[in-house]
Image (cartoon, rainbow, N blue to C red; front, side, top):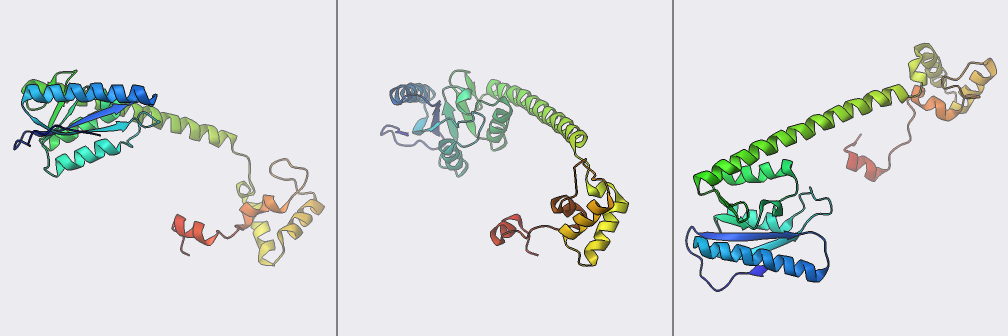
Length: 238
């Protein structure tokens, strides 16, 4: 983080600056942060606003991630009234995701807060700036819808493929399942049931050489008891 100069805050014209860098060598990171901070400070001087601080983040390993504590800090302070805006050198500093950018821009518009991007010459206190931001929000929303639809189609295809690949189970043969359950009700062990079916030559549903206790678990409803901690974490308190 870079502290601003000794200039006292001016009511209603206080802003935070925000800078972000990719994972690079230390000297390169320092130079990049310094260049962004200088661009932000120059813009603040031009606009006549008081720069409280420039906060910074290293971009998440997954560039579309939301793990940006510096940005979170700045937005929280702005929302609490400690400042009324944020200045960045360019909008890509906020996020690399077009789908996520719209949500960030919408936040500033909804709360009536100022966002300035030096490179794009956007200032939401100006009509042209608000029009530009709304255009970007519209593009972002379409991108998010495209991603959502693509993800939905991918899940549907995966589910259909899984259904085709699913192996046959005892539960697919109601008569056989009922017979096995009746044997369990007579306190026969899984091994005893498997031995009986093998002796009678009942074919296995998956084409195996013989019945095994493990292949009978789905039909009998037998399950190993979850460890206590796993039950608590899964919400299973039965």
